[in-house]
Image (cartoon, rainbow, N blue to C red; front, side, top):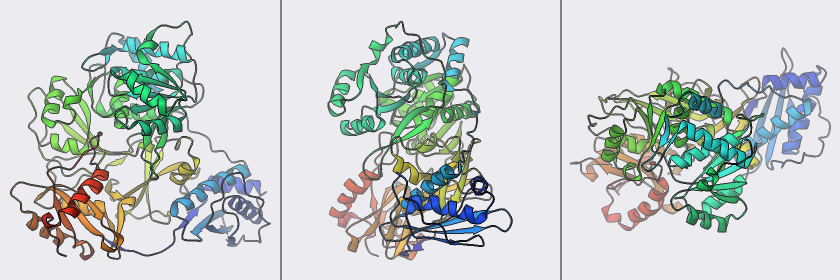
Length: 637
């Protein structure tokens, strides 16, 4: 495990301009390298203002830059442009922070803005790839035509056939009319009606925003406002009360009860597929400023996910897929849409079994589920249990957190999946070998995606070296809805592809192995400074979970700046002493981390989506750790 010394170095990016854009620039310059350099400087000046220097064999003093464009100038950034004209023209841009207030995201905004300005200046428009799969609405309609009486989805109180699902979609689409570009909120909880509303909204040409009724009303109001929802459909036994609370905070949209939308209308439904590419859904993630960000996912990306999932899960009309994720967790998209486009049956788990591993395993058997998804912490508990005889599960897909070695043997296959919400649920996946001692990788990119590992300056890292993971390909979202500044920092032109296609900067630290699979290390924003060193909390957790006495662990740094210390919260295995385990863990860590304090806990708290609730750990439990210093193991450095 490597712990890097903290260096107070201002961020810098060294990036080649995409080759196709360079070619377009040279054509616009009449094949004159000096004029091409002037065009590059002009585009850069519109983003960073002044402070631009040109080097290389085509360097000439640039003309005075024009006034900046209407887009925001990235203050505090400086640029060096290197233009080489020996052989094919190449252009490299070095962006640096001029002052301490300019961060790496600011430099990436500058890069995104520069590429866009240069493309506009020289008239470069890369061709959009043609959709490679059938649209999801068309696929569901075909499934309904083939087997209209087959069950599409059922919960513990309701069921819808494929014929009913499509008829409801037609009714709602007729009521709304064509809504390309429109956004409709769906307020409720997992159930047949909720997911039927997703289909119906897509049928109208609009995009849906899942609104989990368990979320605080003020957060839901932020989501409705940011997405600029035209309508909000409420779907739950408490729909009226839920909608009334939300309406008080977000009065703009029209609020509708889904039952009242079932009345047939004389309006014909719009075409089954929008004439232009549209957004399928908007899934909100937590923003670093406390304001949620809505990741907009295209219909073509959803179609790619559904097609890949159909093949992976080997789904057909006789298959059954379990649905357990909360509606605000994008794993729910994975559970429903591959199944529906295959004509399979989706069974929604009752609320009382969702976080009860023995009851959940029994339910999977009773419901005769062939494939299902479980969040990593829940899956790890389920995989330790003896399966019931009724279980016919073929494939368990797992994701949302770091997966530890899986016990074996198991009567079903396990697929470890990784993917940011911004990249249509899943970006990489790999089968897990039960009983293997190694920590499972997060697999390889999906067939319609690619991955790249880069260093702090944006240059690719060699295999085996840690770096930030970039995801590219057809699964990359359209950005954060109505948040161009946030989008420009995270959804950036890839300098290492000819066309400069957009990649998503995940903020995750990984290593690429020689076999092409990726080892997940942790979040870049979970790197902390301690004792003059930069420590990755995810690596601390990985080391802790290799200790014989630790079942599961989560790390945090607590205390005021002058007294910061590392705390590892751990569920200990039976028969293991906390002080002995703390000493064992300390021996495995570099010297800068050996002053850790081990805090035994009965269990790690989980979010409503089944992930480890680190926010709660770092507030409630760290406060308890400070109060009960005498009960914290290994407090001596």
